[in-house]
Amino acid sequence: MYISPLNRLTGFIRPVGTISGVAPQRAACMNGEGIATLASHNDGMDICFRAPGSEVFGPAVRCESDADYLLEDGEDKNKWIIVTVKTAFLRPTPQQARVFMRLQDGEMVTEQPPGAVANLSLRVENVSAFKLENVRVWCPTPGAVFFFGTPAATEATSISLGTIAAAGQVELDMQLTIPGIADPSPAELIEVFSKWQSF
Image 1: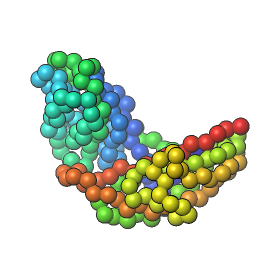
Image 2 (image 1 turned 45 degrees about the vertical axis):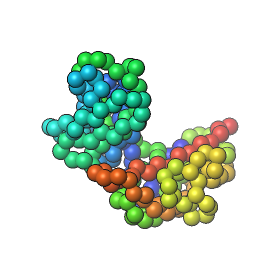
Image 3 (image 1 turned 180 degrees about the vertical axis):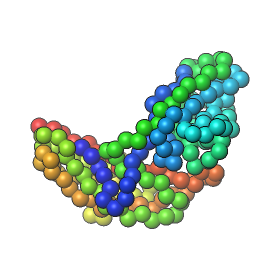
Image 4 (image 1 turned 90 degrees about the vertical axis):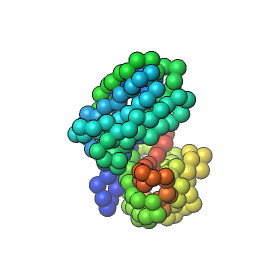
């Protein structure tokens, strides 16, 4: 099943590839497609990122505890990646690996500056040969409101779209007020998730 925008071209970047102890989670759409690089320095806990097409690594971030970290490109701070670090698996010597950035369909993702209000029309489409029952959608970004319902931030509070027949579709409108996050990367990743049963 795809969730696609009706009024703009959007997608989300899926990062694939990493160094030991570092798991890429999310990447800015500004990265575009291509090959990025993750690298560690010194004792392996100083980690940095270089976006596709860039020639400069961003500033190394000290990762001494298990947590999520924001790594930025050295030429454009709008190109970033969020990684989960497990320190027990970091190698004590410098390492480097390619990260393949691929533009994926299937979820709506957009980037807007903090405080912006985005009105979006989405199409939820069943591209399978089977009907999908109990189709539910939710958006974990604070400030997301579906026009016909209340904020649905988790699967437990998700909005039901009922049954979508094979090759069927449902149009869905939503409004997003983008929350502010700390500089120097004033952008928020927005994702709409879905779940269903197939019979």
